[in-house]
Structures are given as C-alpha cells and as structure tokens.
Image (cartoon, rainbow, N blue to C red; front, side):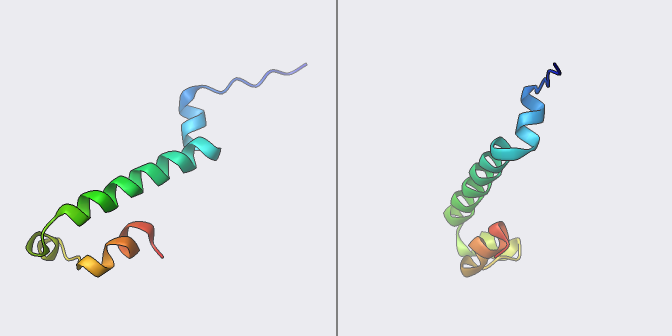
Length: 58
C-alpha cells in the first residue's frame, strides 16, 4: 500500500485550500481598495468602477 503525505504547504498550493485562500485574499483586496478615496485610487491608476475587474480579472 502506498501512502501519500500532504503537508500544509501542499494543501495550500493546490485544490480547495488554494482556491479558498485565493478567494479570501482577493476579497480582502477589494475591501481595502474600496476604502481608499478617489484621489488615492487615481494615484495607483485605478478608478472606483474598475476595482472588482482589476482584482478578479473579469
């Protein structure tokens, strides 16, 4: 019988854990960008209407 050992790093980089981690990270980025004022967003080259598209890539 063969045993497959998966440590935390392996689980985080692939599969469900990787997707969850990516979702949480992107959601946090959207929240943080929405808290910036329009001048600060302009400084980084993003308009308020582009935040979701820039973060999620849709």
